[in-house]
Length: 557
Image (tube, rainbow, N blue to C red; front, side, top):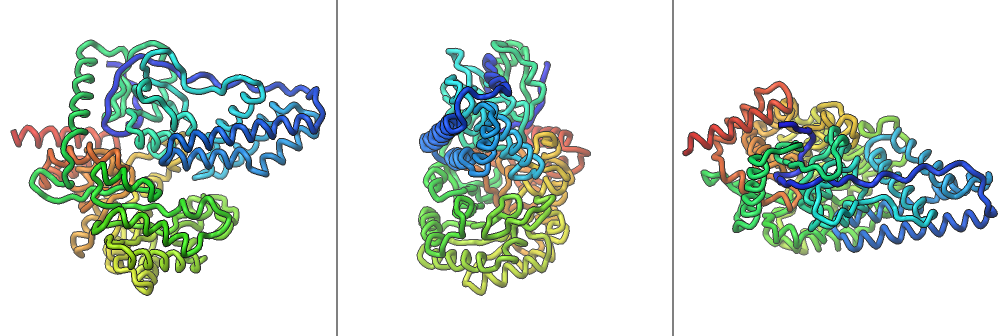
């Protein structure tokens, strides 16, 4: 059967007719404006303001991670540097549409060259420019089509503003030709439980109206499906819906081995939904939301209030908080705003915090005070730890502030290779598979052109995870997984077989992972993991794991 391969998000499967995203607006022509400089400048300023307010309104409607993304886009639209660049072009007599197009394109190229987090924002900037130009022309902005019936949406990539407000009664599935598993499209699709395959380059050849099957579990789009294939896909969708509605239980394997299933959260407001979906605690609480939207570090009081709000939602449960993970790829004037040629390898994570220790000390103070005021089981960890000295530094400092359980994130291969020594001076490790894969494969996790390398199924990544799991078992230290890999149900089984003692993921992924773990014993998990480890590449590791999982099921029957 003809297949288009990409990276699947979740376990879902859907089928339906294709509808393609509308094409971008044609580039404006470089013609002199017929208005005065002041009139043209005012016209553009009004359009920018209208677009920014619309993005904020969409964010309020969408809520969750989408709100944060759209608010960031609104801030980007009104960036003073961009406004100056547009004004300079208008002062030369250019028309507003061309000035916006050219200024935004120049700014986008700068972000692309920087790469990392800012490189990923380049696509968002294109979307903002299109919306401003559409407003100036008095035409609708390019966006999601409305063919009048449910459809499978095909797009180059999806702007956050469009993903946030997708009509889930009409959009059966989403397929993008660009983007990777950690792109905003993928993250928002997972949050909304949209069946999605990203980075499927061949999907650009699909035509409106043709029927396809989108199989996220396999990471494929099946074209020209047979009646039997359509029937099987429909049956699988029904089975998945049934599994999602099954009673919520604690995470465990078929033999009763407990595998706590935790939630990844970026804001306390997501806690209630995580609890409702069965999260047994929090495996990763990202604290960046407190810092990234401000020109100065939040006060101890502001931080304490946010941490108390989070901890109160999980009385008696484990809550793992990651201290500020920022640096040159997410510049903060009060942390480190120096230009770096390769920010992904620069002053970030624990390195940036050591260089600005007062920020780390204030954060630990706020966390300790919140811990004292609540009954949750607070664990605190440092990001981007690469050396034993960094691990010891953070653990000792955290203990000085009364933090009872202090650990490290393993995202750098060096920390994985020396996991026995890192864990000897830490209480626990949490593996961030997104960055661990990025650094192991030398592939920017936010760069669509190398998305194929950003696959945690690669045996090189799995071997590093096994090293950490083995060290944890030897030393009696917990080893959690908090990267996107934990949300892949079969990979979750592999991770347990490699030594992971807990799994943390987007709350919407909990049901699929919970159901899949219950299909396998701990011995099964080890065998499936060994099959994946013995492969030569990510694709064959995934295939080997599927075959081993099928074999263990046959043996049980």
